[in-house]
Amino acid sequence: MADVLSQQEIDALLSAINNGELQASDMTEKNDKVKVYDFKRAMRYSKEQLRSISRIHENFTRLLTSYLSAQLRTYVQIEIDLVDQVTYHEFIASIPSRTILNVFEVQPMDGKMVMEINPQVAYAILERLLGGQGDASTRNGTLTEIEIVLMEKIFSQAFDYYQSAWENIEEINVKLEGIESNPQFIQLASPNDTVIIIVLHTTIGEISGRMTLCLPHLTVESALPKLSTHQWLSTMVKTSVEQESHIKQKLDAVNVPVIAELGRATLSVSDLVNLQIGDVIGIDTGKLQVKVGQLTRFLGNPGIQKGRYAVQIDEKIQVEGDEG
Image 1 (cartoon, rainbow, N blue to C red):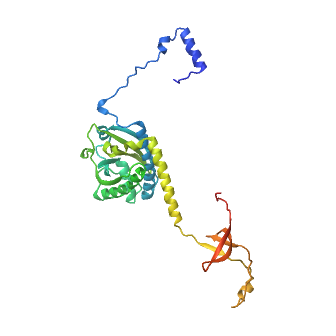
Image 2: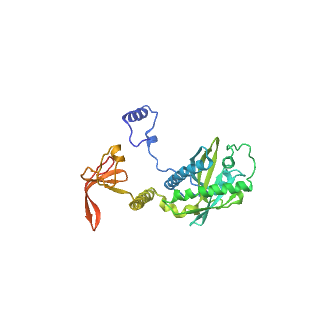
Image 3: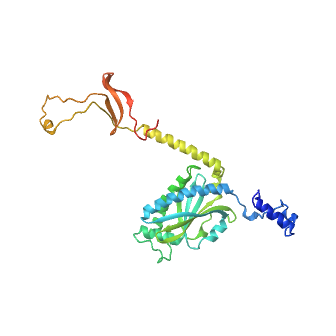
């Protein structure tokens, strides 16, 4: 209910009290609200921190979508379905007993993270890499050694973009450690530890499935103070200024051709053909046109400075798009 009632709502309440349908005591605000809290499932992350994690991974999904589309030469769409915190036991229980698990080492946190890939999605990727149409319906088994090498190669390169997605918050180095098919063989955290999961709905051609990232607390612990909205915005502004300064420095070092045109003359084709050594061609005199590239940007006068021919700039030519 809103803090301020409309006149119509006030009239309806007064009418209900007068008719005996509602007691005044029922309208007394109660402040003794109780919220159930499970100490076995402690929530470590605030909503603000989860929103920041979600923004980071939205950027990563865009980069990953572009990367996989280029590698597989087909339509790829990846969207975030869910960002939540659960216990590590709940995460392991939610994935199939036979799946594809990419385990990554994260430095400098000295921790590990995992990406679980639904077998249908993994087989669709492999089918496209091996020249097929991406139909994974005929697959019902484990990966061969060649397929493991292919998966390691494509996701090792894909997670270079994961580092880029985090660079505004934390400088991290992600390295693929290996691929597992049984979730019981990996132990990234204790069963009751809280982890962050990011569920990615993935479409490759006609095949759809999920990829799920699991971030243990050790992996994100050092970055937690930087995940507030204020810190996020200040970091983005700082990064934008640094990028602008870097671009300006690069542009300042770019060489561009500058030509001072002394004058012009118009000749007929017959005169041009009959030119001989020693002939003189009259040109239209006036201010020199100084061209940057193919565009006339300045007007000036010829002269000499320190024994060299020079041009003194008298006027700047304003063109559409110039500032000031």
